[in-house]
Length: 97
Image 1: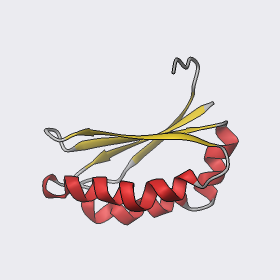
Image 2: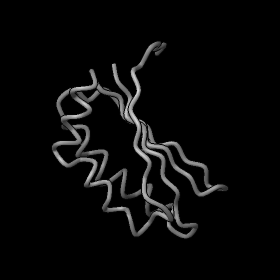
Image 3: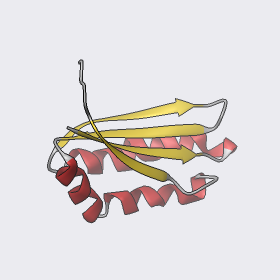
Image 4: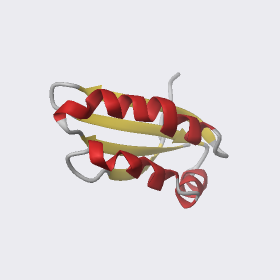
């Protein structure tokens, strides 16, 4: 498995809008992608930070989602962010669900 991590710095007055954007727009788009396994949006309201974690079957599935412009769709939230998103990918070495 492979995890795609996107760290977001949020504008203080836009936190709830970011949650709604992910809930109503971004997550439904990601769910329909080949190799999708799961999604989490982690939020620190005091520090105005969010972390999006998407789990994929493998790295190629994560990269295919990016090629299908899903990462670009997340840019729809740019007016809500205080800095550009930081995207990283990691192999899932251990899973305990």
